[in-house]
Image 1 (cartoon, rainbow, N blue to C red):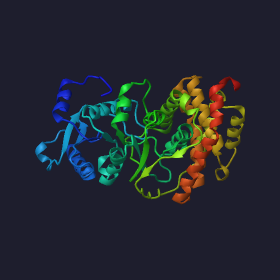
Image 2: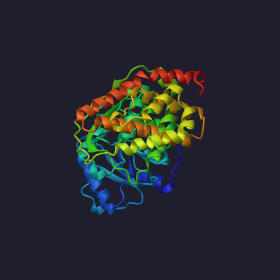
Image 3: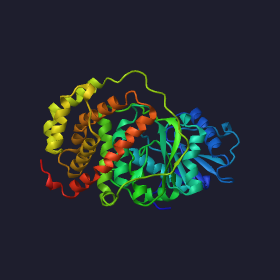
Image 4: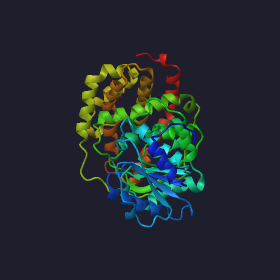
Length: 413
């Protein structure tokens, strides 16, 4: 075991009496005994026959207790209540998520599991075959991290699709559809790695799981789960979401600068499962209001943006303020450079970081408006092609980031 952190005596005793496990399934979000019973049934169906003769242990929040007599025949499946800290749901989780993951990984490590599966979304919405896809590549093919691929509706997860996914592709060289996901499978090797070092500032979105796996040479795959993106309970308003997600991303970019500056191009990762198609969202999006928010941001935040963005970019943003909704477009290469400029400003601490990130919100909304206009009536395949073009643009503009990162003084607004 890689870490030496002590747990409460009763927890240590509980884990010791449980024995070992081949697979640990962590259910941090179950809230009632009935939900736990239902989830246990799904786990049994998912993992039946996966590793014959092996034992699966379900780890759940210690506040949820059920009568062991209410369980059907165990068939090698055990339950362990564990003090899992409360965490906000993905895709824009709160700052305590790193500690929540650490607690879950401690349980898996103590039980000696080969694979740990975290079901951070509602277990009732994850069918057994989807759960199996998260663990099977770890147990049978020695992958270290299996990220989810959710069925994405037209205007869902735009912060991830428009920033995180193309940035991870360009910087770390891996085409991972959902670098931030509620549900994932992880090997004992990567669990130990996560427990070895406690990195300060790991909060918000857990993009570090993917980046650390890649930079340390672990094997990463993704699984098409065929389920919608998990709904977040009490989602934050947009500027808070931008601060949470991009703050975590920019910190990660800073920590791994020596690695990503050497990466050229990108590669797909092995993908398991067949996925599905999302139902289209009803109704139209009011793009005019989004554009008005951007225009207001330009008037109120121009001085802040001038401390972050080159003059040519500011001119392009000024030009956008005069366009009608029908002709409103934010080019991909310009958007990529804007993201990179804000990442650099975050690194240099040119102002309060939270203020900086929130000041990025109107520019992000400009991208949202442009994207929404382009894909408003597009077929699913066309939307995927559109996002592929965006990822390619982030790759093509990466030399701009590398240059600015190494010689930031060459541009001094």
